[in-house]
Amino acid sequence: MSPVARTYFGARAAGGPLLYVRRTIGAALGENVTIAVPGQTSRHGQVIDVGEDITVVQVFEDPIGLAPARAVVTLGGETASVAVGRELLGRVLNGVGEPLDGLPAPIGDGRRPLWGAPMNPVRRRRPRDFVETGISAIDGMNTLVRGQKLPIFSGPGLPGLALAADIVEGARAPRGEPFAVVFVAIGITAHETETFLDRFRRGGAQARSVVCLNRAADPTIERLMAPRVGLTIAEYLAFDLGIHVLVVLADITHYCEALREVGAARDEVPGRRGYPGYLYSDLATLFERAGVLEGAAGSITQLPILTMPDDDITHPIPDLTGYITEGQVVLSRDLHRLGVYPPVDVLPSLSRLMHAGIGADRTVPEHREWANQLYALYAQGRDARLMATIVGEAGLTATDRRALDFAGRFEREFVGQGSDRRAIPETIAKGWELLDLFPAEELLRLSEDTRAHHAVERPA
Image 1 (tube, helix red, strand yellow):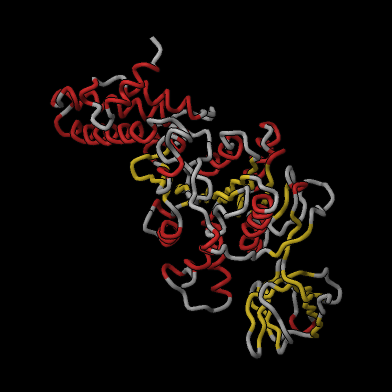
Image 2 (tube, one colour):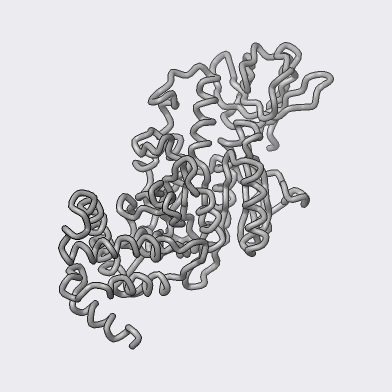
């Protein structure tokens, strides 16, 4: 039975991007709405709240000049949906799934509702096997695992979006399985838009990517819909077509700001720092759409990127994101000032599922011990750097001086790879180059078997 449209003449009131309609019949959350005013171009919207007397409609386009009493409001009977299918690979869409690349609107294999359905916990498989991003500080030290949610915590002025573009270009499934990237840009500037699209075209990443662009000048509601458009497309690619999909969401902070703006327009009681009290559960509706399902050949892995206001990791956005996700990759302002790119600070960074994605049959046999030893020596070098500011380098022991030198080289040579992509064997080899600076008796995190294996594998 086809959906039934209902038309209402006149609305009770309007406030910012919201329109309040009285006594609607059978209105549903997420239902599509058309708003016509005589003499004006029709606007579109979506039902975001349903009450006994009042239905709240979020208007997509600019609401200036929208006279509530003259509005003809039509509830279409369908919830927001987007075309899905393999043909979307290579396409550039806006935040509601409409084409931005000058090509016809995609038909796909059908349409799917944006809100999706929660994964049945019983059908979830434990994540295993890693996703190679080409970034040594991630692949080697904070390995991303299929089905994982691993956010990147950036800060104002730090190259979080540039890192996102590098990952989109360099990410792949290491065994050559079908792989695709869905890149969702939320609230980015026109300059950033052109920069990313140009990089994707020149680098060849666009052919295996779906790009959903919500620009800063686009309506606020699009910031709330864009990640759901991208995730809906990703779910079809992963669970219907058997493709391993990496979803990059940048910038989650812009999404949360849009959520706060809509909450303020609805006169909601604010929570921490003015954000809605349901911020945690709303973010969970995005992040929990990652995973691996029993019986499905594909997977969805997420890399959300967020900008920490004032570099404050206790701010509600990174704080709540950290509760939902499985770790974080933290960008360092100090490393950025030193010209290290990507400026990943590996000490506060963490991938809670790393152990499930590394090892003999996934990366290299000694990966875990290798990473632990690098962590230990880098932490020792950072401590030695602080001590040197008090007593000077001459006051350090020989071991601490080696650790101090190691910390600098680790940052410049291992973390600071520039925009070059490194495969996992190159990352492991670069780490061993640095570990070879130390005598064997100081490599306490390496077993005798690992040291012996490395001695055999190391070229003369």
